[in-house]
Image (cartoon, rainbow, N blue to C red):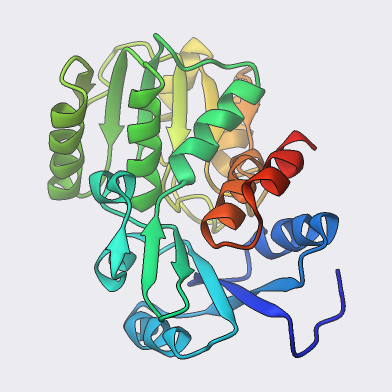
Length: 274
């Protein structure tokens, strides 16, 4: 990483907790390869301080933008001055650019990164039956991206019925031909996805019924720390192929840098090819 000086542009990632984030090391490595005079640092911000933190960042003239992760993605939608159509449809924001006038411009890139990682793992979601745990910001982004990638069916499993119903309603409008359900029942799924925070702590319950692993589906995680979550451990023990959380970040990190204005499109394309 380059030396930090008075000309260095600052970027951040906002999370609660913050210990598990991998974005700083990945983004700063990208900055170093591209010769960018910038640094991305972690900010531990609790939900009750999020609005104040965003307002403070508006006042920092050498601040370029930030990444929002658990649990801030949904709340960020109302704290931005402008959001992309994708973010509006998903109902969450995970990347924000600070314009020179202090306006905060949000977008959602989680889903695009997740689908790109699936394809890189050799698992094309087109035509597949998917069971997704979660209906929050990350899970909603993944759901919309999977729908856009042409899946045949999506089952959403979540503890909050109202949030689940809202996600399914938005999906039904955007993708009227997509088969949707909330109960995995006895149906077989080709892909299982954890889009929740369950698995970050050792005593968390599994986000999905382990009985779903009997059909040996492809199992993918959105959590990056720990690298092997209880769900992935159970999936591997059942003989399933798995995808860890890190590839989702690796596949969207360049898109994040682009949105925050850290890199020009041609530089981003070079970075994505690496």
